[in-house]
Image (cartoon, rainbow, N blue to C red; front, side, top):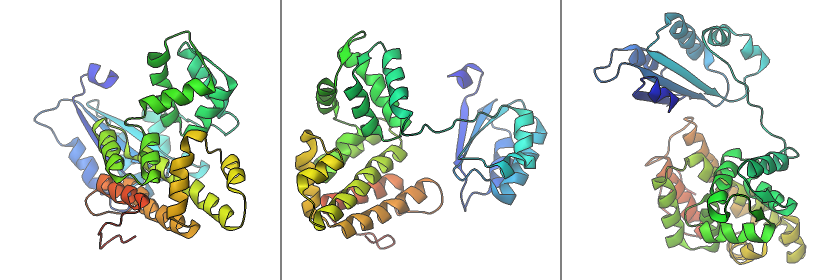
Length: 308
């Protein structure tokens, strides 16, 4: 919104990867547009390092001092050596560098409690822990769920664990949690319906990858423990499987072994690499997520380049 208020009506987004042509990106951005007077150039740098070509292109671009182009660089962890590099120094000199350190697992409940209270809610410790478990360190997922709660319970309301579970169940039409549960239950029709709904609502694909990966890792561990002779009740308790999810988790564990879940996780890792611009998948990232979600349901799709 601030960019639009500043007269920017064109946004160019790129993700740095093995196939990003830095010179072409910068040259294209600097080229005069017939339809836009000011532009915002957003480049995601997952590795925190632009590489030699990227460093050179960024340094040259920042030296142009073009007031009609605003550069936003969203990077992963930038180590000390990169912070001393010429491109980073040029970035700091031309603009502002903001470091956002990830919360630790110990800090997450406090962050959630603070956000809930800022929304006018009075959460119990159990509700806070439940949300922390759901989000498992993904602040974007947690923030999205928290933003919905005041509309559902009303400002100033108390929020305990049972109420939170009911709200999530009632509102889980198009959430990443609903997607995971539908896929685990083996309900292919609902899985696709929720996935398509997420895409229509503008949910980022990275959240879908995170939600599916979270479940796959947990299921692989649970399947391994069950195979070693652990009691199911103990395994569920250890992995915090709530009562409302025992049916879908049980169905998923009956469908695949620990090795199967590991293979599915490897398949999802390929989708994650494609999302970050490090590889390509047939049909694009959302089509690949459909294939992975259906595979979790127990349905094999044909993909010659990325077989399961």
